[in-house]
Length: 397
Image (cartoon, rainbow, N blue to C red):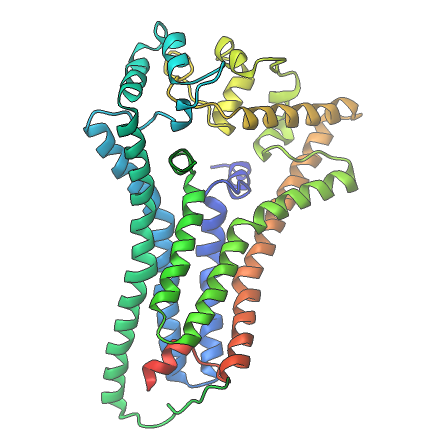
């Protein structure tokens, strides 16, 4: 994978790659180290217990969070296919309009994509069954990871702590240092959720699970604050930062950087003289399947084509995404055409976009990995009067 592809991947906030970088590469190691140092103020044993719990919690949760939904999606798709339905059909196609829909696509593609049309005909005939299957897929792909992360993992982690603590007490005959006092449209929406949006849903369930399974009221309060802030920093802030940084770059340097890095730099020639749709977007995609714009829509807008380059009639076309891509290409080309040296303009755009992506990762990672834990520790000290993990304090009693 080239460096440009790496930058593109971690800059795409609709994918899991920025989450992997922040969660596994930066946030988890930093939180583990900060947790150890914070609890070391209480005792070395407390620090080791807290570090072990945090390590299991961070990487165990990440494993389920990042891999659980894709795995469950594949299992559900396999099951849907086994009972005779196509898991590829977009539920949005049940909403018929004058450009796409199940009935519309059956008529339009019955000659050019007969196999896909058979799937559509079955989905139309058994509409209720298909919608139930898609709703069930959503529930399974989110409920099982929520149960694993929010309820099962923390309870197993706490049981391990209790077991180790009893062993430590037997071996070291610890009898002191434990008296710490405390001071004062449903189916359609669900079926069309991306993996990242489903991860946001599981994060909400994870928050409920962690608060529910917390060992005392202070741990519940801490978990509620920490998990809700993590949701904001993982799923809301990066998008806001990306838009803000790109807008600032355009104002300061008069360079449009709203496109993917893979379309900037030397690759700008791919879109410089591109043929764009003028009126009907879907008609353009169907009549020009091999055009550069249609290929870009495959790559960035979720448009699918069959092997014979007929657009897959089972997949709903998100016209807003396609229209936005078209507008951003037009804006970038306006900048290219005004530039004295188009190649230099494209290179500057690539450097600026790359800098914005790294700045986004750095800012959001710092807030997640350093600022949030520090704020949590500060509030813990203010509320409980202790530096130790609230749940472990109870475990030591």
